Length: 401
Image (cartoon, rainbow, N blue to C red; front, side, top):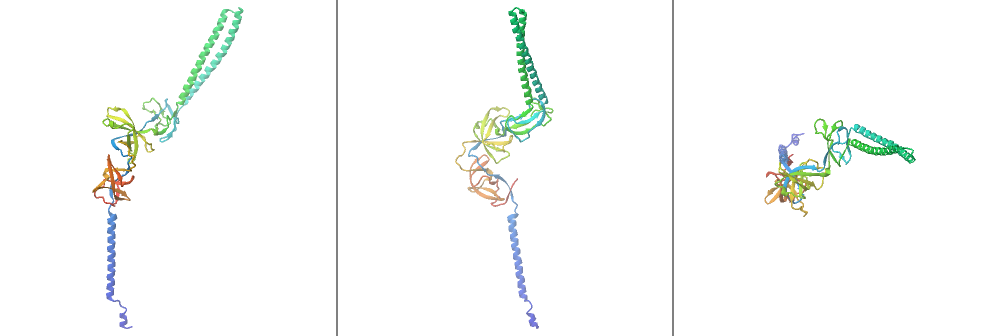
């Protein structure tokens, strides 16, 4: 093969340099694109989510405004600490906290050995009185026959007048003894009744239907209705609450009691459920004041009871004025601080999928620390409370715990 033929097999140096330049341009373009993507991702996702306080939009229960706020507790009208009518040792306790009981249901039993023995003794005394009466009735019948014979003999002058008088006296004596025996039987029966009642008193029953909220004694302990609570003697076995009689009791300053009237609408909020507005009404205003606290006690009934309402829960109430809104216009309430003015338009930031979504709303009047939102927001949606000027639409947010 000649040198000319071999030269055809070599690579042109100009073509080799061009290909190398093209490869370097591709690498450079790829690097730039990668940097741009990384910067975009960092800008989009690398920014930490803003920590914000959120509030839940809740449906306005009415268009009435609050004229007075107060705090108090849920209290039952019927609550009873059940104890025994007699002092004794607890034999068994048949209830536990949270158990529902019916009126007359057995809650506990005391040791009834002594009461049972006393009842049997009373019944025996009654049997003795009954037997004594039968003996006297037999004696009276015999005395009457003797009297009849003596009367016949006296008519024939066969016995003396003294014998006749003795026979009459015997009859009258047995009749008196029989009357006394019958009263003795009656007294013995009353003794049986007392002994039976003492035996029944060893069984403690529920005074009304309700829930056991406290179990205060155990088998083996002594219980007494007259104990002052000292030592080792219990005064109560259990506490029963009628859950159907729950109401709210608040103390209102006597300076503002003129704003409260029976039947007035009230909005009740349990401390345990701050977003739950419970429709209520004033049941009664207790007609006396506490001179130490300068307050008047007001009792408020719930329109409808709920299992979440429990005795002794703390509540806050708002006494409303005016008539409820029956126009059918749906409004929601949010804190006033959640609304931000954007020129002439009011906006809120709704938390949705971890981002703050700016939304225009139409607001109404203020109600205490809240404000009505007439349009643009639905009940249950979460809004940013106190949004700062640096919060942007679409910004990632994290609710503050």
